[in-house]
Length: 246
Image (cartoon, rainbow, N blue to C red):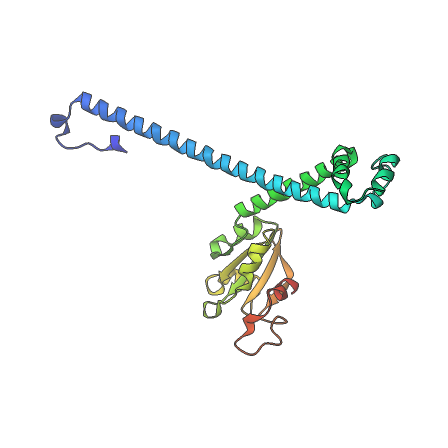
């Protein structure tokens, strides 16, 4: 950009050496900025990796304890431990709990079960991270031009068509945070006439579930079945679970 323009009379004020020195300084500054950005990116990635490892380790510890609690000596079938070990375990009292856990840690069947479960937890964490990167976890507003991209980029997407005069809906915000596996969006029906017509949205609010980009026939229209016992003007005070069951 700088090479495209020249300053009037610049040659009389600055010599070639001055221009060369300024160019070198600019190049050094740009290189330092690039190095700093790379360093900050590496730090962010390292923090994310540590966070992921801590999360998986926590889940691993919880799952291991859950498996230990569920496998009591009297229910531990022959073949998982040798018969002699099972017989001894059946006679252990609370004082022998540590010995029992040591046996489990050395048992190949238990360790295989633990590894399988740990792999499942890692896959669940990876899927959750991918969903969060796609915009899951928040109740977001989108525009008509963003509609197709948003509903086709995730396996399950809830879209709330609303009117600005009665936009109230605290329930979908809660659902978005609790169920990260579903992307939850809202769109102003007046600003999305094409999709309102295409999806035959006639009553507001309307909530439509998209699965793999295809609109599900089952939809929530108005407050039908959600607030039957509530007085006029308080329709949105129904329990959040009603939306999930609709």
